Every structure is written in C-alpha cells, then in structure tokens.
Length: 146
Image (tube, rainbow, N blue to C red; front, top):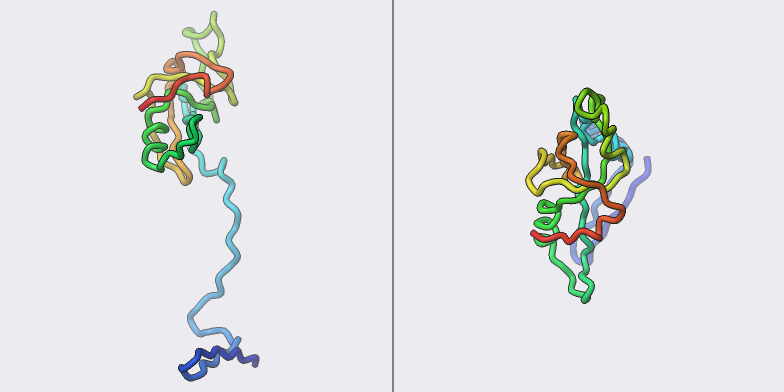
C-alpha cells in the first residue's frame, strides 16, 4: 500500500492511501464527442443550417463582446448547409429547377426563417427547403446586422 503525504505550513499532515474507496467508482477518461453525431438529423424536406458566426474583431480593431456576437448570430441571414432531409428538393415543385443548394453551400434565408435549435457550442437552424432565398460564395459578402 502506497501512501501520499500532503503537508501545509501549519496544518497537520494528511495521509492518503492509493487503495480504492468503498462505494466510489474511479472516473474514466473523458471520451471525445463527435460533434456531427450530436447534430439533429433533418427529416422530410428540411435542411440543417449552421448560421454564420461573425469575427470577434471588427475591421477597425474593436473587439466585440459575447452578447453582441450572439445577437449577430441569431440575426444572421446566412448559414452553411450541414445536411439535407431525404425529401429535400424532390417532388413536382423542383422537377424543372432541381436542388437550390447542396451540403457545404452558403445560403441566404429570411431573418426569422426556420426553427432555432440550441446545441453544445451554439445554434443550428432547421429550414424548409423552399426557405432558401439564394446561395453565396463567401458569407462575409453579406452585411450582418442585428
């Protein structure tokens, strides 16, 4: 049995043993979470979109506080398509036009479109496939105001 001694300047010594404590389980090392496994899977004609997050610093060098960044993300009208539901862009509505976007595209949508879902690390939105207004190459080309 190994003993560990902890001593403070004026306190008596405390001796700890390496024997297991009764009724206490050893903590297991934390497993890395797969972020994509935590994301909701869109059903039907829905699209899962990650809203664009602004830079923490403006062009002029001003550092924005957390609440301002959160307001801008909630009011964001641009997002990255993470997943498409199995029925997205299928059916008579899209026979002639085809899909308006695909996984990985940056899309523009109305400010209050879709359902906001809070996940660890932020927010995602579930949009209907017909709520996509446009696609853009670079999300910073769209001005983000709240």
